[in-house]
Image 1 (cartoon, helix red, strand yellow):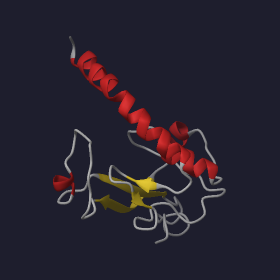
Image 2 (cartoon, rainbow, N blue to C red; image 1 turned 120 degrees about the vertical axis):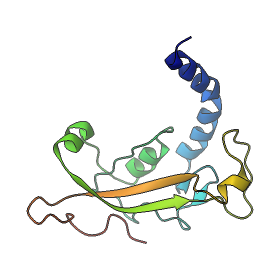
Image 3 (cartoon, one colour; image 1 turned 180 degrees about the vertical axis):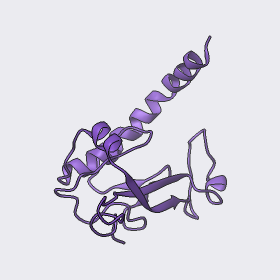
Length: 143
């Protein structure tokens, strides 16, 4: 079996667990973050209002962040074309650790480990203004 087939078989075995978690996340109106479901209030990764913003979710998972921001009014576009034709500036990185009372049934991480090391992270980037070499607009997110 090739490494691709082995990898695909592994993730296919985990798919049912991801789908169970994803259904719960897709149904909620208030975002939570990461394996330990840290609240948006505690880790403000999304601006208070995403209506009419262009939001792009990059990463692995089940795209429930895209579902949340779509319900809140974001716009979607041809991201492959936009990203390949434009430069971006990284403005912030938020690392999520497990809270003190964390528990998990995830096989890939323990709560004890996740209290010491970030389990998930979010990068914030903004399109660079080609005329000023600075970011277009203000901060990527407001805390």
